[in-house]
Image (cartoon, rainbow, N blue to C red; front, side, top):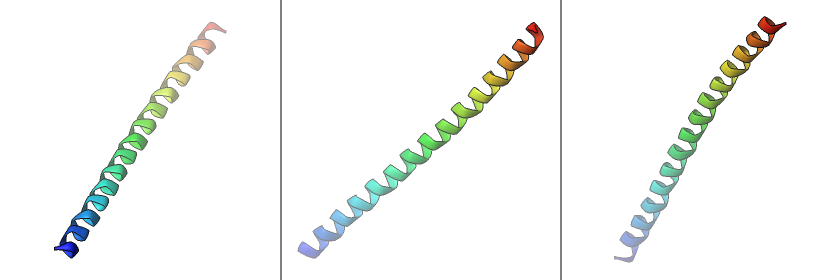
Length: 53
């Protein structure tokens, strides 16, 4: 019985690590998307500045 509860405890830890990894992956994906949007904004801003000059 004790061994079984230990295994379940380990499963919980592993599951938590998997959840943490998925969360950090999602955060990285969001950050990449944000950076792409920032690049687009910068480029359109630069184009606007060029037009004004």
